[in-house]
View 1 (cartoon, rainbow, N blue to C red):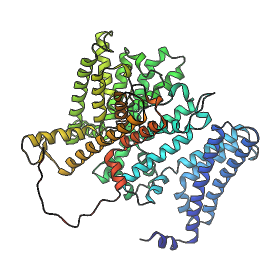
View 2: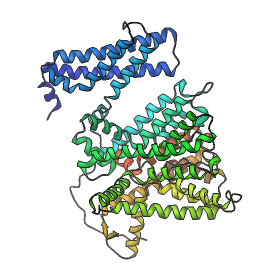
View 3: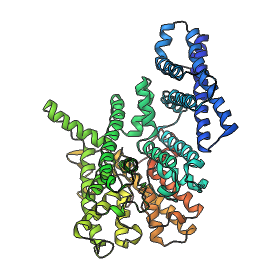
View 4: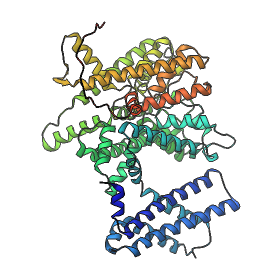
Length: 578
């Protein structure tokens, strides 16, 4: 149906209501920007008073537009039902002002706070409208992913540039703000300025929000609000199915709920456990709690950002902190599809006494993860036993080796100084960073399932089989082609980025190569060169982090546009391979 024709068929009150809704959203966004500027630039005096006046006007416009829609609505009961949330919000706002015994005109601190909260809540209730904005444009799922990440990075950069985002006496350069916003959104952890000492509490919270949104994806959050408001349509489901690679279209809404609930549970449990460990050494309980929440979210999202200048080197011997972080990193890196499948299996076995299918994807991810953790720990210990592990007790040697093996697969925290590692251990970490976490997780890399698919493909070819088989299942050729494409594109990107950085930077090849692998794998490990990169070097790493988080295949599909329709077929002819 033609949208324009549909709009013409609307009655005047309906068209007016749509226009008022749009103006209200724009006004609320303007109000939010106003007090961000006021707070971010420490405005006071006449300027602050002017901003308060504008906020006051916006608030009463939002109230007026609600009553205007109600008065001119042809069916009052229907209008009230549709705008029920607005009714309760505005009622609460008016009651609060009445309780403050205000005459609605002076701008004292309490009323200004109420006005600002009202605007934020009004805007928050319309978070689902972001989905509608994306749906207005004919974007492919791949291009939608790229667009959302670029949008988050742009907003994050603007917020990190505010004076209030840095500690007193420090400023953030534009390129450094872009780098930090990209690293946080792409859950990488590479930093050009120290997070704990350069950024204020406000700046650190912005980084934490970027990590959370970037780790789960903006579309996941907007779709959650769309679900709550009952505005989650078929096109939303189709786009999310493509983004999340989830086959069951009818269950995609439940998957979003599972993702957000599981994320909250894991991060909350992690924060509690870390709080108990941090508390004895913290200056205050509030500092311990804040640090616990920050590191729990950063660990589960595999971000690698730390408030400690040395990451977790000072906690190398603390068993509780090490294994809490390890559990969070592994949980976030397994992928929500795997976790949901495992939970369903447990629930079906206990509740219904029947077996839920153990998906091939889950098997490949779990086996690959266990093998990589085991082999990675052993080889790291072997490579560093006479190096950085030499003077440590045996228990700490094993724990440090295991920690580095876990965190190398996209988390980026470290209990050993990465710059002092041997060439053997550094190259081992590069391999682990390249493989990365699992699809549908908060991590990067080519993904464990891609690596496993290549291994079983090679095995099947060696055995002379025409089909690729694993656990009595045949993997479709489309997935084989995708795996080969992902690895080829990833290696190509890493090679080109390394070549460029070798020209622009004055560091050893190992340091540059390691940095590129870390950026592409969204890990955050560095041999100490990140802050010393030239502007061109930072730009290359920024683009590499974005490509690694989005995925090379998704990025290629976004650039290529629509899939080509095959209208013909050429005759087959063989070529010599190997």
